[in-house]
Image (tube, rainbow, N blue to C red; front, side, top):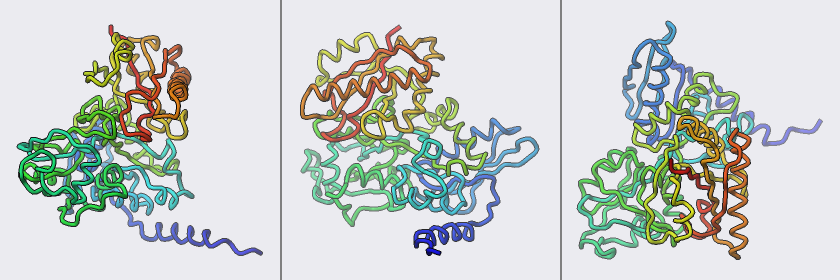
Length: 438
């Protein structure tokens, strides 16, 4: 008989260790992971969900450990308790993989290496496991007295690498720059490292590191030479900068730019579960969080809700006259459809956004014929090729909306014009949703 491969033994040891090391929980559900998600948003979602189930207002109490709390409620004569532990995105994956956590809260996507570790149990990249619960903007923060109003991503990278050491080098005051950064366990740090530093800019060793977004922001707001980054919900008393990427215009994070993910440092906040192994209470909480009521709590928490709203954008001088004419009788919905593979496969968020657009139209008493889809492409070798790709993207969304019960949606492509990122940035490949003025 042939020997089982070494990978088989490795997987068995991993599963056995997960079972042996998983402590019996005193709670019906444990949520572990990101401080960005766990500090305020996750407790609000848990409280909102428990309030729907319970006979009164849920209670909250600390565990004695920093950044942990227990939320409880009585439901049908049974006491339900949920532990929220917010020690960083990476800690959440470990507790989910071990079987201790029912939900992993993360401010970054699952890493391929993490997904591979549990692939025999669940596909963390699949729709039933990966849940985008909110959109956040990575805020670049300075002291309120700082005269600088905008920076490029590349300049921010140079600052945090220590290549630019004084604000006078950027047209500001003659003052040394002090760096404030999140710690290594933070998904906020992972996002900043990925979107800003990359491989070109190592973080300067003198940067101060924080577990808490709020504390970081508070310290920046007291330091005239300070610059830091945090989640959008933690701007507090600091000054928020506009950010540019490549040849795209600088954007400040707001309802439209972050919800549409046009803002260069926008990011998704996630809850991950183990597919069909997800505990019932966890699955129900996720559905609540993704629904209209849950997303209203997302907005209340300071993050950006995925419930669409209609906005009349303020166009700057870079917007072509042809685009102004195309959209002059429309408002823009705060949702963009984006793609996971190639040019036409909608990603997990986009698949849920189909139903959000449908619910929006129903609530507003509008029809599918009031919509206009506008596709965009990244820079291509030929203008005609870019036009074809942009139309193909819009057409794929039109077909998906038709399958969701919204037929005859108008669509067009706008080629590779009006980029929201530098050349090669996948954010440029998008489909915007516009709705006719009443």
